[in-house]
Amino acid sequence: MARAIVPGSFDPVTNGHLDIIERAAALFDEVTVAVASSSPKSALFGVEERVEMLREASSHLPNISVGSFEGLLVEYARAHGAIAIVRGLRAVSDFEYELQMALMNRRLAPDIETVFMMTGAEYSYLSSSVVKEIARLGGSVEGLVPKSVGQRLRQKVGLQQR
Ligand code: PNS
Image: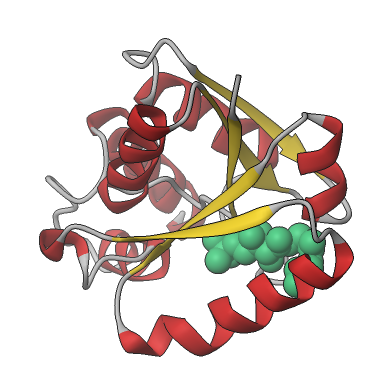
């Protein structure tokens, strides 16, 4: 049984993330989506909300589970018996950061491989940050995030602006 971890901040999950998660689920027997709770980026959504949104959005995939972690990703991956970490690449600009992370993770855990997947071209300009900015400025996020995430974003942004 081959398990992969798809880690990220997922603040919130976008359709670009889901594309990678679905493709990882087709390649590996089991996939654990792991929400980093101690991300350096300040998050709009709490960890539990981010986990819930991911569970809702991936409920059609039987081999996906969602959890959260603090501390080192490779420790979480090891504890879950994962052989691989899956990351999506959008553009060349992602490469440097991803290479640094993959090499550091390999140094920390040579037994865990990082696997990169090219994101779908239709999602290459999509990021959680851009989605949050659009929502804050009152634009439509339809087609960029799952429907339930769009609703939660509107609620959250409405609350923040009150
Ligand atoms: O969605 P993101 O913000 O690009 O995801 C980055 C993430 C969460 C995968 C990365 O910051 C991470 O792995 N954090 C956990 C702490 C860790 O293991 N750091 C060492 C990686 S070199």
